[in-house]
Length: 89
Image (cartoon, rainbow, N blue to C red; front, side, top):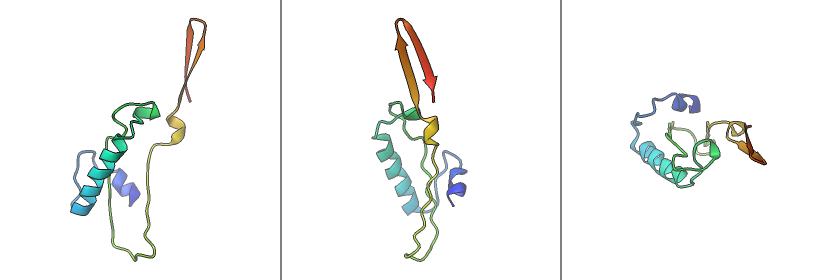
């Protein structure tokens, strides 16, 4: 289901009103973290949250999360005299 959710268009709205409210709440809370693009700070930490639900037995309660890989969210700057060496890790 996580793969189906991540492939939903960015501006779409889920049919389930409970899922829709959760998408809105999560997006607001995520953007209040001020992590920003690529983890380097800023206002737009998240540009979309997609929640898909499906009935299941309460004992199983499966949850899947897809997000950008941590290794692509780091940056490094080395200052040597007047030179600036910027490295994306």
